[in-house]
Image (cartoon, rainbow, N blue to C red; front, side, top):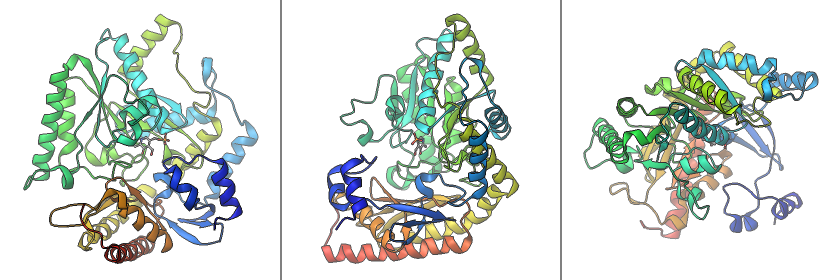
Length: 460
Ligand SMILES: Cc1ncc(COP(=O)(O)O)c(C=O)c1O
């Protein structure tokens, strides 16, 4: 029986990333409040938010300082914009701070309200730059199969997941997808991580040569793939990729929307994984998700080209009403101040070995084929047969069932395509809470195994 509130939801809302038909039967899980790393539903049941919302609530759910920063800014100046040379203190201060902590030398910051808008802006800026540089053919952007970069028309085209393209008539022209770096699934028998990385770098080079280097503008990647499976890259992957990109003057766009601001125990994922990005997209943890904010950081050479274009055209014809919303910027400034003052990122690095160890230990579970984490993010894959890596019939949605059992155990995790489960708790999680997350997840896996036996499920 759905509650009154649940019925009102079903009758009024379209839920993102939801099977809209079956949702009409199951109804929503309605979350009412949060405290630390816990959220509470309308019945008062607590859950550990093991996904930090959508990989974003890094400082948990009850940070009074962030609330106060928003209240103060809202009372002082709730809205002013950055169009036509207007400005405000919170945007200036935030941009200065971002340049200071950026993973490579950056010249300017352009703000958006989301990760999708950030990646859309990346595509447009790369095209704009190459037109300014007199390279009108250098326009193709290479993304990766199962990479996730958002849902607006260009960013959904970058996203390498079938559900984001099918019947949306995507991807648009000039977007290519290269191999997915998931060693467990895609390496050849006996192939080391390093050899696999070298092979993928060679494939990327072959693709660039096939297309013509003077037609390839940029490559975009998440340091750790999130929505495409919570996949940790194989050893040596990014240095090998970076070398290819440098050889052909192809921009490296680091999509730091999940990994930025401490997720891997460094300010940006690029620093942890040996990436020297040309440009960076960020969002999510920049405000600990207390308010929407995203953006891109760009290098001097791109800025110089933009100067030329806007001189020629008469304006820089891009920008959102909420580009650099002052309340979001004020909250971001406070969020970064807290990361620094409380040593949040160093603490993530200190807690990471426990998180990685507890996650890796789940690989011993009879249902788990792979379990791997880095920093405070990781994924596991449920398989029907560990020896052959064969999966269950996707229609049985075994990982989604496991997610339901975890929910019953008071743990929110996320099931992803390919029977994968992602874990990505708030950065403030304690070591005891990490243990609690994995104790609950183990019980959820045990219940899933019991259900699999009961249903007599076999490999697909
Ligand atoms: C790596 C990455 N890039 C981009 C996005 C899109 O961000 P948004 O949902 O804020 O548009 C996401 C969202 O999860 C993401 O994980």
